[in-house]
Length: 110
Length: 142
Image (tube, rainbow over all chains, first blue to last red; front, top):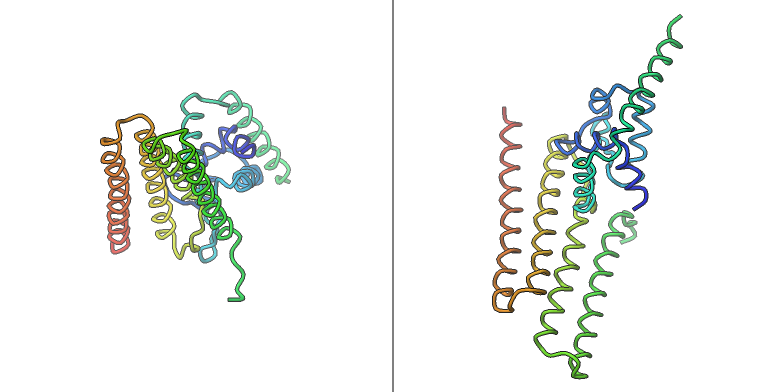
């Protein structure tokens, strides 16, 4: 249960779950919604998978992520969104993501 | 027969067995209490139905995590996810209502309304599955 709370504490991961509520998506599709680097997104997916909140399945050559929330976890996600738990971290995590991306880009440029 | 079971299937079977054991254990305790004259037959009936409702709610709560075959396509994955989610919510809520009714409502009403609640949840789940499958098939046809 600790892993579930840890996973739900982050606004980016909650947004991922919110997007997956609509339909299963590939890692690329999900990453398009966030201004963070691919490695950061992969780390978020790993935390969600570890908490057993999402599942990765291979269809053809694409890996798609599917929601695996129990009713209790779904309700918990709803409550955390309703009360905006961890929204203060959003700006800092976004900023950290943006900085990381900038550094990666600068590092890639000759 | 030598095929190894998927770990998820083993977990699901164990969960069912544990819940079954809880229900049997609780009903034996209630029967014992009745035999000792500590509680009357009405309380045995109520107690058993409350435990049944809670156990079934706990089981239905985990429907989305239970084993399912790997999806064949994105349509299939979308359909499976939506159906599991709706069925899980409706069944869990229905069994919580079942438990609450048997705990607090007069027995003659609890008997009818609890059955109606579970019946309605099954009807909603089946209706949603049929509707969603038809919508999915129609969208693939275009």
